[in-house]
Image (tube, rainbow, N blue to C red; front, side):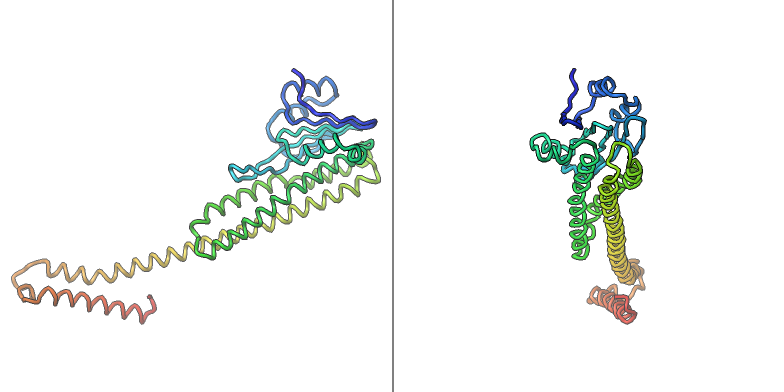
Length: 308
């Protein structure tokens, strides 16, 4: 079985991209390149934590990026594996992230792009891949911000109960986003220390400082969104709590108002021989009037106490 891969080769650099990675693809890398077996196993296994490992003849890097699941309306993790060598860059893009696929097609079909990004070492190509992957994050961040704005309007329009599930969904997406991005800064910094290995020494700091700055911007936005959604969650819970308090207070007042009427009804329900008003022709209306007077008296007292 032949490996499923795409390949672009220039005079000085080769880019291999795998959108599927199974046994055939793993065997191909074992036979063609001198990669550590654990790195190939990492490509076969489920999502790993971001990391960077250095070897004498290549660098292996794992990064995770967010991908939006429209059916579940959730943000999940997509893992990208990089093998960086002096004359090649290998990407394992099992989740088919669009920025990598589009850049590969651009370099494959456009000579200008191929010359621009694949001019002899992986510095520019890797930078362009990481830059586009980070830019891919910003529309998702904007979408979360829009959801938070809509959520805030819903809370203060009296839809506290309806937005609870929405709040939990946004919180889950922010938490997942933070988990995905939290190790990027350390990995990029570690990559920048390899400025004399397979990279242009005078260029890697300039290029990857921008990547590092964008990573910080993404993390700052996530922190702001986390604080905002937590504040809205607390506000929504407080509003629901106050509503429940109002309901409980109203039910308590109704119960207290009914107690005197129940007491009068119980007394006159004993049917003893000396019970007053029982045989009076207007006894029922007189007893009913007594109940109403007691209830109105309690209402007046509650009003003066400002309990109503």
